[in-house]
Amino acid sequence: MDKHVLLIEDEVNIIEALRFLLSREGWTVDTHSDGASAVEKIRNIRPNLVILDYMLPGKNGLDILTELREDPSFLTLPILMLTARGQMRDREQAEKAGVSRFMTKPFSNTEVITAVRDLVQLAK
Amino acid sequence: MSREALTGSRIRERRIILGCKQADLARQIGISASYLNLIEHNRRKIGGKLLLDIAARLKVDASTLTERAEIALIASLREAAHGTGVSSEELDRVEEFVARFPSWANLLAVSNQKIFGLEQMIATLNDRITHDPQLAASVHEVLSTAASIRSTASILVEDKKLEPHWRDKFHANIDSDSRRLAASSKALVGFLDVDSGEAAISSSPQEEVEAFLAANDYCFPEIEAGRIKPADEIINASNLTSISARQIAESFLEKIVADSAQVKMSHLLAQLEVLGPDLVQLASKFQVSLPCIMRRLASVPRLGMGLVTADRSGALLFRKSIPGFTIPRYGAACPLWPLFQVMGQAGHIISKRIQISRHTDTVFQCFAAAELIGSSVVNSAPLTEATMLIVPVASGQIDPTILTEEMGSSCRICSRRNCMGRREPSILGEEF
Image 1 (cartoon, each protein chain N blue to C red):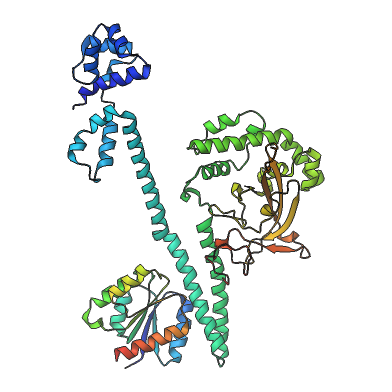
Image 2 (image 1 turned 90 degrees about the horizontal axis):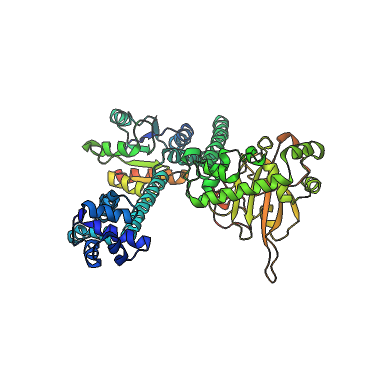
C-alpha cells in the first residue's frame, strides 16, 4: 500500500507538527485547509488515508465525511477524524457517518501515529 | 353553560365581595331572595332594568356583570389544558370552572404562564450552552491551540536528534501558540463568567439590582444631595422589574443616604487629597466605620475601585467587579479572600496585595473589615457583615518587596495549584 495521506486541517501549527511526524513515518503528506473544496481535493489526489478536522471553514468535517461515504469509491477509505468536539453526540454522529477512527484534541502524537498504523493494517 | 349565563355568578361574587347579604340585596331591588338566588345560580336570565338596579346596588357598571371578562382567562386555561389529557367533557366546562372558582382559575392560568416563561428561559440557556457559536468557537480555539502545543512539545522532548532548523521552527510555533492560548482562554473565561451586557439574563432580584447599579455607575449624586428620594429613584428604574429587586435596591439606596449623611462626597474627596487613601485615617477623621469609608470610596467612579460584601454565611450581598478582578455571579467566591478572614472580627482590618491569576500582571490591594449589624441581643451572637475594597495597583507602583498572594475568583476558573481552599476542580485544569 502506498503511504499517501491527506491532512485536512486549518491550524497551521498542527499541520506542521503532524506533517513532521507522518513524514518521519515514511508518509507523503498533502495538506488542505478549506472544507468547501475538501471532497474535490480527495477525488483529485486519491490519498490512502485522510486525517480530517471537524471544524473547518466552508464545510464541516462531518458533512465532508458523509459526502465521501456516499461515493462507493470512498467507502473503504480510512478516515481519521481529529476534533475539538468531543461530546458523545459528535462521536456517534461521526461513527454513524462512517468514520474509521474518532480522536479528540488535544491528542498525543503516539496515539495519532498508532491510529494511522492500525488503519493502514485494516485497509490492507 | 354559555358565558351570558354566567352573569348570575358574577352578581353573586360581587355581592359577597361587598359583604352584602342575598336577602338584603333582594329587598333593595324589590325582588324575593329566592328569585335572586335563582339568578345568582344562573337559572334565570337577567337584563333590562333589573340588571341596572343590581349593578347600581353593587356599585359596578352593568356591562361589568355581563361582559365577557373571562374570555382571556378561559383562553389561557384552554391553552394550559392543550395536550395534557384533559377530556373534552371537562374542557367544555371550563367556563363554569371560571365562573365558580375565579381565583383558582386565575391562579392556574398565571401558574401556566409562569411555567411557560420558565420553560422558555431554560430552553434559551440550554441553547446558549450547547449551540452558542461564540462559546463553541472559543472552546474550539482553546482545544486546537492546546493540541498544537502538546504535539509540538512532544516532538521537541522526544526527538533528541531534531535538526536545528526544525527545533527553531517548533520553538517559534510553541511561542505563538502559547500566546494564542493565553488570549483565547482569557476570552473564554470572560465569556463564561463575566456579565455580558444584553446577553446576561437577570434571573434573580440581586442580579436585577446589580444591573441597575451598574447602569448608574454605582453613583447616585441626586440622592446624595437629597434632591431625589430612593423610593422615587426606584419607581423610575425600568430595569427593576420584580418587587424583591425593588426592595433590595431601595435598601441599598437608603444605605447610600445614611453613608453620605456621615461622609459627604465633597469632604471625602478633599480629605483624600490630604490623607490619601488611608482607610483608617479617613474612618477616624469622619468617625465612621471602615466599611462605610470603603462603600464611599467605591462609589467614586474615577477611582475605579471594586467592592464586595458578604454576610456571616459567606453569601455575597453586593458585588462591584472591576477589570481583572471578577467577582463570581454564581457559586461561592475564593475562601482565601481577606473578606472572609475578617468575618466575626468587627473592627479588625486586613490589607493584602493580591494577584488573581499568575498568568496576568494585574495586582490589587484589598482591604477588608467587618461590622456588626443591628443591635445586641442577649445570648445571641451578633450578626456581622464583611466588606472588601478592591484597589487596582498601577503596574509602575508595584513594590516587589511587598508580598503578593495569589488567589482566585472562584474555584471554577482558578488554576492555583495545591490550594487548600479548593472546593471543586477548575475548568482550566490545575496546570493550565
